[in-house]
Length: 124
Image 1 (cartoon, rainbow, N blue to C red):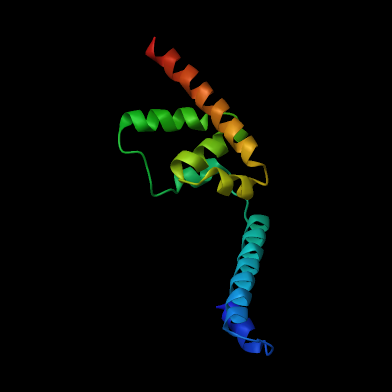
Image 2: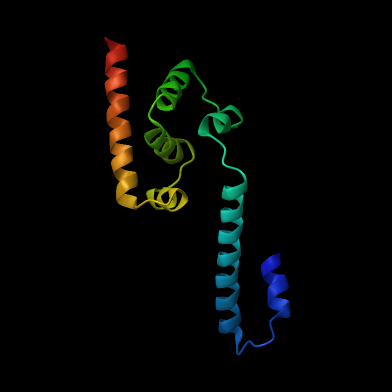
């Protein structure tokens, strides 16, 4: 909505392509501003988010796995949760956390490895 209000105030468009490019860029910038402001105002721990989530595990084994994920160190836990439970891509996670995609992949690898060790330990 803010983007279209800003467009109405803008007077110098040369053609339809210019309007389209301006709208896309302005919408992108305004959404980035919203994300930044929300992140500054409300930084909620992932544990609290999980309590309020709608995608609760269906059976006991899913609860156990989620419990194991929640016991991971914070960096690994956050990355694993965003990737598997929020269905975010590595690029989206990297942007959200302010890290490189390579770092996301390394954290996923370490998290999976840690979960595998935990799962093998529970099987014994």
